[in-house]
Image 1 (tube, one colour):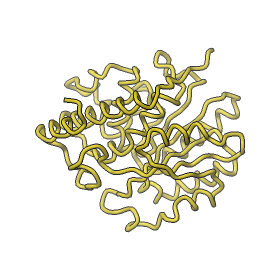
Image 2 (tube, helix red, strand yellow):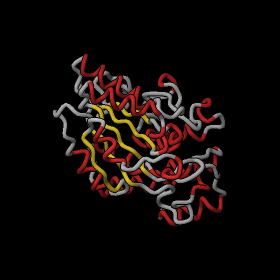
Image 3 (tube, rainbow, N blue to C red):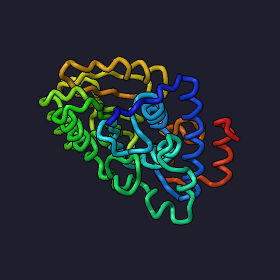
Length: 280
């Protein structure tokens, strides 16, 4: 069985895809009445970089055992992932707009993998995705498969004790095929992350748990590319990337406004957002 290949698209194309996907996410939020728009927009650049440059995937065989794995631990970002998977070719984008929303598969959180190609884990209860991802990484090592596992977390999710139990286990098992990316947009559902629990010093926490750790601009495609390209694999440590992001990124009236955690955009707001993104 052959190993899938990554697309390796250049920065300029990645930035254009991210812009288009933001517009689609906003339009779909209005169409399907799905919330978590701000949280979806903050992680678009990360998802685009992974799916269109790094992840080795086979869209004709989504269960190829040699594929890279991506786990959306922040499951409320599912509407962003749905658009990315459609653009990547796992299913037609038109499936999202069917009257039954793909038989209910395109909801607020990812469905079980059997229901939708490209999904690795059904997530939604925060703190569960990373433990599942490290299980995949451990399985890959035991089976001598060269795939890598990426798990995308939210900063609020790092309030969960299961995240830090998983972090300890991954370090103990020297899972250097596992990468965590934290979408650090500084908000939770009800307030600023720093006002809920003391995450900072955030980088130092991951480092003290035995991870190679760095902090970058999560909206700079070049920073994302160079950081993941420079993954310090082979050192016996998992890798954590703290990606500074902005909730609602890309649309002026949504940026850093936590009302868009639950608000649904009107048709006029969709048009205004598309105009700002330059996709009308």
